[in-house]
Length: 112
Image 1 (cartoon, rainbow, N blue to C red):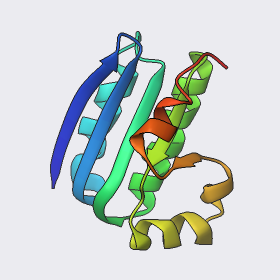
Image 2 (image 1 turned 90 degrees about the horizontal axis):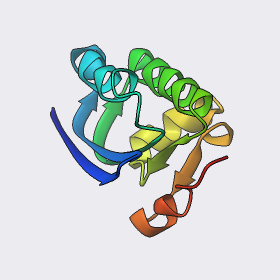
Image 3 (image 1 turned 180 degrees about the horizontal axis):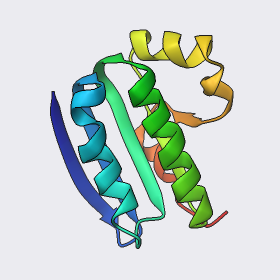
């Protein structure tokens, strides 16, 4: 698993998760948005995420709650087919904003 981040604006970050999104990376991901109180918007790039388990999904839900409490949003970018299946089975695809391109994801970077 590889985790990369990029600051898009003072209030927004892009997190790219390459590989498995499971218990092995959860703490790293949580730390990125929970400890950075100035971050209100998180775009989570799942275009190279090969697997997500229940802990990874719960982490996304926790991040969504945290960002919304700050007046922001957590946007999922280009989830892979295996990740889409999990999102659909759990009906999380109707909870999260999902964008097919970075430009469309960035359109959500405005206060709610």
